[in-house]
Image (cartoon, rainbow, N blue to C red; front, side, top):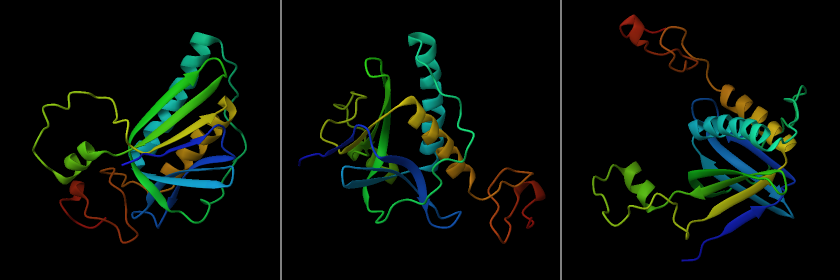
Length: 192
């Protein structure tokens, strides 16, 4: 089976976004450029960690290589919805980050979930002894995006807004509140 590498170096637009109401949202990374549109699905925690790790990567690039970093954007930036159609190319299993010193750009690579991740999600207890390699399989689909530090800052800000736009947390237990409330463990199961 052949794999596809969807490369956008640089994209016209690269954003994190969601489809669906709070509590039932599906998170996507979407890249557009050269007449192509690629959307890949991932988990909310992956979007949150991606924003956090990109911030760390920019700080490290500034510290080690003296890269000039833009300040965090003051304006709202790109707040438009995802481009249609939102067709899932694959579900992300692994995210990779790198800083290219020669071009002073950030490289983000989203790699499809392989069979090993699918087995874990399905709860299979079998472990393949031959698979001691932690590197993602080379025959998996990938989305590769190369961003300037400015575009990376914009992506980070939008990703944080998207993650925080969900259901508000319960002030007692921290679990998300549905519009009808929830059974709070801190109130011994009474509705909050």
